[in-house]
View 1 (tube, rainbow, N blue to C red):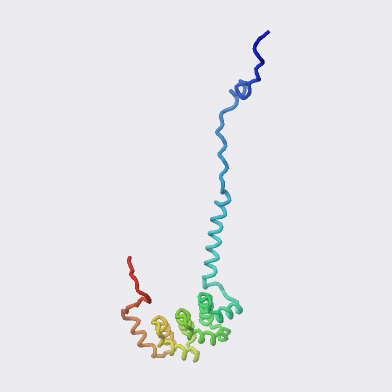
View 2 (tube, helix red, strand yellow; view 1 turned 180 degrees about the vertical axis):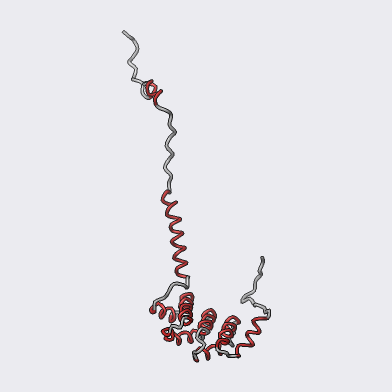
Length: 188
């Protein structure tokens, strides 16, 4: 008899020589990557956010009449009012008679405290050179404190064959100084 204590059976591939020869060594599976969904979600969110921003600022999107009415009466978001003005300019240029219902709002915008709205209103009013209310409003805008508004009004008045804007047209062609609204340094 054997005096040695019983040995536990060997475990693993060494205990079975047939497995050692038949099983090739395989690399360990890579650990799971955390954030696989993040790699998909982040680009999708970037595309969606970019699209929504573009969609809200693009003036080519047609407006329904209700949106037009809201945008022309609520000036809290000037870009929306400008969108409505842009759409009206297109309608007027196409000869859409239904656009005339918005003329009082356009004339009212020509007196806005916001220079960007007055500038666009002058441009829109130049699209219909047969409207007496536009003609009168443009004659006032040609005296506006903002140069760009005066210049748009002068250009629009040429469509009315009105020479009231001629001095502004001549000034447009000259070099002029742009004054900063506040002190500072510009470095390039």
